[in-house]
Length: 111
Length: 115
Image (cartoon, rainbow over all chains, first blue to last red; front, side, top):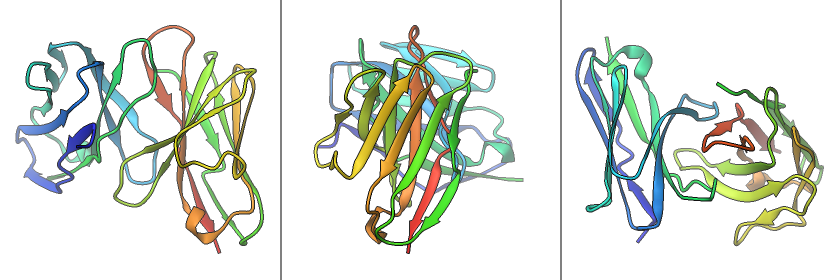
């Protein structure tokens, strides 16, 4: 079993839709859960991160972690065409900066 | 946010030549930098961890003699692909961790094409 599983999509939604992006992981030692956004042929850009279980909100973005089920989610409200990108989940252990990336989900928001 | 500069953004080279990629943290000191490789429609795969002033730590299956990493200062790490072959063609990305805090910042990536 891979350490991080993420449905690569592609996912296509109309502008204004609520988008749900998800990952599962197998390593219970993961404590930090990052979400990165990557545009084609660019480096990933950190969107937000959470520590341990719980929710974190930043504008239109909400990150959720459920450590009991090893499930990570990113919600995008009122999605915009500029949100079209590949979204990567990347958990890591405490005391380490080594990230384990999911495959990424390619999102297209249609105007 | 913090800025990580990576150069060049793309490079085309002949088989057998060596290519050097630079990664600089512009507004913070980075004791640790990471090098990743990403094939089309695949995730980022960690190649090696670069620590300032010491030898890099390579992931399993990554040839350290082929992918030379130098982290000579707190703001600069370089990756040299030696004797490049077409199968080395990929998107290479660096990231840097600030000395404090939990965030990793990424460079813009280098597309290497070996003919």
